[in-house]
Length: 133
Image 1 (cartoon, one colour):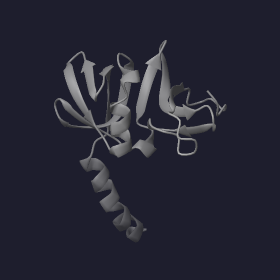
Image 2 (tube, rainbow, N blue to C red):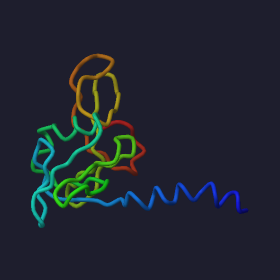
Image 3 (cartoon, rainbow, N blue to C red):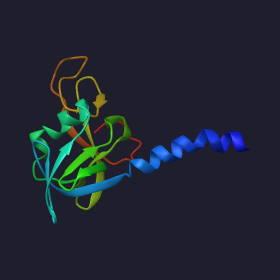
């Protein structure tokens, strides 16, 4: 039993070092959020930065999960953690991108890796079983 505690102690210490939080407000590309407390600069990994540069998200009610590094700087969790959300009519939706030609979903904008057409912004209900838009 003590060995397990010793193995888990470093993980607990790491989790305590990086508190996770969320920030929500009006999105302004590239990568800025207007909140009731002021403007917040958003940053993230390479795929997240592509989402933050997408002008189709301008003006949306936007939420990001991650952590503050300064009072007005927020680092979003990696793209694979599904840390980017938008709200429409009060419903929380995942920010995804869809290729209607190949039926391929991605989590950052750009060309479809199959047909090379531009992917379309597709806000998805996370509880939906339907893979199509």
